[in-house]
Length: 214
Ligand code: DX5
Ligand code: ZN
Image 1 (tube, protein in one colour):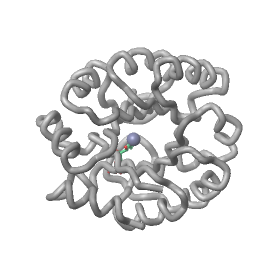
Image 2 (tube, protein in one colour; image 1 turned 90 degrees about the vertical axis):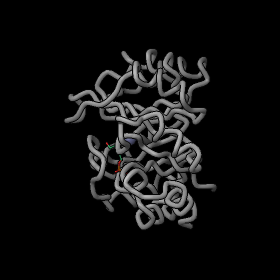
Image 3 (cartoon, protein in one colour; image 1 turned 135 degrees about the vertical axis):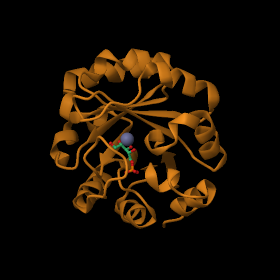
Image 4 (spheres, protein in one colour; image 1 turned 30 degrees about the vertical axis):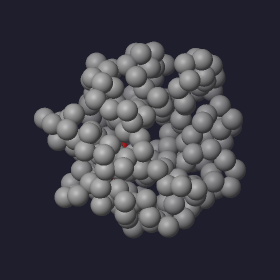
């Protein structure tokens, strides 16, 4: 499977947001990973639909919106109206009925739906709803902040998931070339990467190396 890289703008220089986005786009990014936090589901607050709408104006990259918020179903319409191409919600705050409703709604809008699970959440939690989603985003750090250390105990979960799921598997948190290789070997094909890209000197070279970990 071809590896896709999704730079996470959480670690970019927000005073130069448009420039940073254009820089990763011309450096070979496949998607733009946008972290939305509400101060409830995670202990941090980031950006909302108003900012996403302006991000949409400066890039052609698919916008991969990672909702780390409670009651995601209340906000999905606004993010879709602002230009999201992919919406990820967390299994810890989203039951099967809600997911089913989101599935139907997003299908009509041609927006793909992903489910994410925290490092401590077992695979068994998402197994029953895998038929409702287009992709899975496996968290390899506890969500809330960029620049944290990769949690290696998620590797068996990725392997198990790959053996039973044929859609895209993204991994988010602490990804660099070494940890990227581990998750790709386990079956992931999308790398969401924040600090390793935005703290690097040459985005193009960093993205190129991430795409060749295997
Ligand atoms: C963490 C976010 C990640 C974060 C990854 O809660 O969901 O997308 O930006 O950042 P790094 O790659 O620095 O761990
Ligand atoms: Zn994320």
